[in-house]
Length: 305
Image (cartoon, rainbow, N blue to C red; front, side):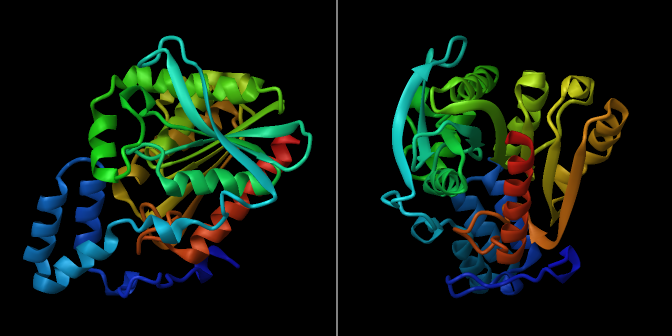
């Protein structure tokens, strides 16, 4: 399927993407990134298009039960929570969701980095998806020093915003090093992440240099161009068409990647919203999510083998 053939498809929530006003999508993006709280998001959506706007806004709130595609009891994987040292981080210790494929290993390692609200059920499912493809997957919970993901995104977003952000990045850097050096790892490391985690994927590519072997950021802010020369990992970047804030950071990033000789591809998926891979809300675009994930797995298989 070509990118031009992608079409938005409904998810089972009663309201499809096509029925949601773009202004409500824009408000949801502002809400997701901490610009407004839930009450203001709902009120402003209702002010735009009345009761219909409120219904659109409510439909966009995540429903994680439907995000599970791989059961945590799936016989192809083994999952558990692990703790590990994180010197220089927010508490000196981190916790993550480690998922290994069935078998003795070793396996190529993949770090899966959450959005700006901690390790929610969707990100855990993505880690399981990576494991069934043959990768040792670690999804760290950046909120562990603050008590862990609290069970809802609103509180998770508040907790994550309250952390020392430089130390949070150190915690995620230490997570990458932990899974890379794990006894079940081959030592080959790939990193993927979503929204905030996409930005951290780009950051880690620069921070880890030759110790990272492939990256696949999803709609994450580009790395500082001054750091791009340190990137050695080939990148496959996934962007949404309707995501002006993130997309505006990419022209300079792409120019710097090209100048530094870093292998990279940037895919913009037509008709998509920020968060199109997350199958818990109507921002999800089934075709784009499937195609981007296929590209991510192929990228990791090529460079982590």
